Amino acid sequence: MNVIDHVRDMAAAGLHSNVRILSSLLLTMSNNNPELFSPAQKYQLLVYHADALFHDKEYRNAACKYSMALQQKKVLSKTSKVRPSTGGTASSLQAQSLPSEIEVKYKIAECYTILKLDKDAISVLDGIPSRQRTPKVNMMLANLYRKAGQERSAVTSYKEVLRQCPLALDAIIGLLSLSVKGAEVASMTMDVMQSVPNLDWLSVWIKAYAFIHAGENLRAINTICSLEKKSLLRDNVDLLVSLADLYFRAGDTKNAILKFEQAQMLDPYLIKGMDVYGYLMAREGHLEDVEVLGGRLFNISDQHAEPWVISGCHSFYSKRYSRALYLGAKAIQLNSNSVQALLLKGAALRNMGRVQEAIIHFREAMRLAPCRLDCYEGLIDCYLASNGIREAMGMANNIYKTLGANAQTLTILATVCLEDPMTQEKAKTLLDKALAQRPDYTKAVVKKAELLSREQNYEEGIALLRQALANQSDCVLHRMLGDFLVAVNDYQEAMDQYSIALSLDPNDQKSLEGMQKMEKEESPTEATVEEDGDDMEGSGEDPDLEGSDSEAAQWADQEQWFGMQ
Image (tube, one colour):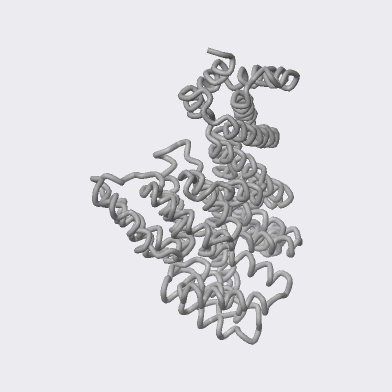
């Protein structure tokens, strides 16, 4: 047993720090005396040393050492050709024990991918002949091709993965995301479904994810729910997260939060999808819960984008946009494919007035998630913020034609129409259609209420908001109902609605402003009552002052409560 065997055994045992020190010393000895080790031994040393560097996350250095190992392998190959059969069986056994050249190239590509040198990674993997590519090589190539926009090559590589491993579900998702028909993908798994027991769910699973990537959210929800009802797949965390995400895309915030919470209870260490959950909680005004969630996820892993996005959402809805921008950028640094991180950073840039930079981020989010309407909404908001009504209208019409006339696309188009005085009636028609499809769709209710407020049609607005609040409780809807009630002089119920809104979101500034405005309007009345009381006292009458003392104390309590907010 020679020294190289000892290095190999330590590497196999996971003693990476020990391998690093010893291999470094042995490589220096080899450089000072080239005859000390054979080309095969030096190749092994370089690979083991590079593996130790990779384990220490020194990716540039590791890639360099792996490349040196490949150069040494070329020298070894030339030597073998010059002396073809010296050593016989011993040399063939040595060749079998050498680290795989394909594995070394894969490791180089891994280093490049981590360093965000995707073109270099593709170049290295492309150098491996097609017939020699292992499933993991094809999978990495497929993901790199898809990221680079080379869809045809990505499809070919994903199909090759499935040919070798027909139950590679992430490769199936990759194909469906590239618009390959669900039936075609299912046909590639037919043999394994027929030969392996308990895989009757797989065809339904493929169907569900085909609907997801086609943007057919409601059909996807129904399909996943049918999967969940099967006893063997009940309470599967991945299915619950997918279902929660679908409810979110369909605009059903209540069910989305419910499913995320259910998944989180089943797996307290869950990270996937928690960025969307944190965003929804922040948007609903539950900032304390969001802060706790972010802290808990940081304790699980700070090397994932999700905890940074969650903390960024907390900052964004606390109106600390610079901090939200930093946290969003950090999340993108960790995962450049994080759609929620791109949306967070884009929203922060937009609110800081850096609209053109925001547009770039929303466009990238659209490229990564073409079926997510919030990506398009962010871009449309940027166009409207920069008075680009024509661009916003073009985008809204494109969404409407591509994804069909559902409540969400109708509301997006109506939102743009509301910005142009010439298209107010069209906006009203679109909103009526949206509410006919989904009377509980909050965004449509809000936009219709805004339109009725412009028209000073307060009674119809009150009826609309009451109907919407019959089956849900939403801060914005309660606040808007308060505004409408003030307009018709129903101050007491308006105060009640503002209070409910603030109980749902204590940070809702507009509800607080509405209450404070009403308080100021009440102040002159109180002053008049006090003057009347003075007159009564001066005239010798004995007024009942208990009521006024009680009222004054009540308003004083409210003033103190306002100050605390």
